[in-house]
Image 1: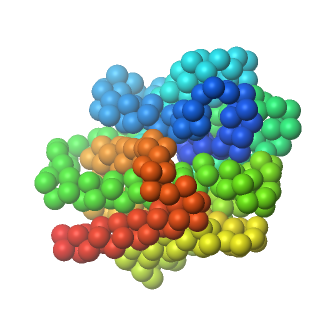
Image 2: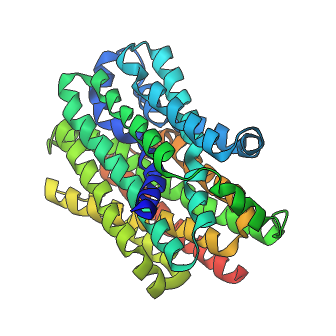
Length: 383
């Protein structure tokens, strides 16, 4: 039971990592509230935490020197929880803007740690299983928060931010059940490893960061635009779009459970096939004539999204020495955050070409497919 609680609490750290966009179903109401502000500026409030995450990831080396792992994770969880619920109490645009950046800073303090802590403490098959389950934990957390947002939105869009109080529960679990000091033993074991990233390692990390950035960017675009897409086409309201996004995220549970099997079958080519499948899922959403086709496309996209990202971090854990894994993970997560943060910019650029939702999603899907093929081609040449 002690081991189970420890593993569950470590996985719980990932529950809050990708919840920044869970409030996207409140965007239509926020458009009405912040009248006079451009639509893109209001959408920015959803993706803004990614900027804070990027800042913290760039400072990751400094943070490791300043704080012990336990203190860093605890502070991060406390900051994201307090800033997450703050917009419930006051809704001035500048204030919400600042709180969303602070929320990102909190997430950034624990983001890379929540991933590298698994690769440092577990090895072999347990590591692969935990990495798969960690991917599931991310989407479970995002799904639960999204579902909570769907229920809270009936009390007004400000109430949706109360869903971030879940961070306090994660903090309690971490403090109670994750043993203190275990990471120090891991540091001693890693001291005999390589001291710096080689040129080949940097190239690998750069390629995987690009793949992660495009995967997250296109997924974020789905999260941001599906509510508006459904309302525009008359396929549902904000609550129903919240349900569709939750279904898309929940399928990630299946992806996480099956990851160990998938990686044993496809090996490194799993990154290619998951990327292509994710792109095809977005194209299905683009051509969807009904609600049920959108749901099917969302299921395909959600499954492939979770597998693709998990494969990125699994490849890092295999190819990068454990001593350098947290640094490598930070750069990969930085790619994820960069992709999320630049999503409104990408959507704005596509907007110069077309405002047709079908073409927008089709372009995003095609972009991901091409990127996955190119990244896999270069990785195989470097192998």
